[in-house]
Amino acid sequence: MKIAIIQATSQINKNKLIYSAVKKYASGSEIYNFGCSEEDTCSYSYIDISLMVGLLLASKAVDFVVTGCSSGQGMMLACNNMPGVICGYVPTPKDAYLFAQINNGNAISLPLGEDYTWNGAENLDQTIASVFSEPFGQGYPKSESERKLRDTETLKKIRFQAQISFLELLDRLDNELLQKMLMKKDVINFVLTNGTDNDIAEWIDNIRQK
Image 1 (cartoon, helix red, strand yellow):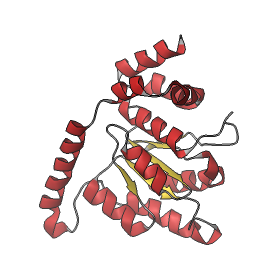
Image 2 (image 1 turned 135 degrees about the vertical axis):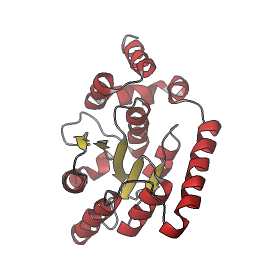
Image 3 (image 1 turned 45 degrees about the vertical axis):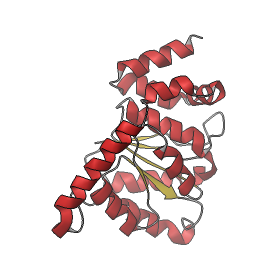
């Protein structure tokens, strides 16, 4: 599994904590840390980051994204507006486990500004541990796993049918949002190098030339 880590600029000081926990518990995975960090040239809100989450997943450059903002809720809602993204809000280890097993999504949002203070570091650590404690999508409780998995697949089909493609979304977005996304060069270069969706790569090349 390829896992990306990227959170809002407001929570830069939590990035190393997130990266350390994912690296510890997602053994055998390829982990890519996109910050945000002090090295970024501008500030990125949860709206900006959700667009990059959508880009990373739509291009198939990664399989899963760990993200977050101050409340975690805004990032979760913004990410779920991105075509193809199913993002869970995971404030506790139990929520994280249930999301991974029942909803089998491709992104999680952590509430980094509320309970993840000095006394919440252990909760963050155990929340990440719960996400990666077992293979995704096994259903829960086990006695109802068949029904749970069937419902999850139905939800994914409904979302796919209800949404436009990510490429169509890019064509409709405000240019200011797009230009800010392109400024996050580590993400853009990673998508161009590792993504398998040639249409998205072509779109990036075209808009860069304008």
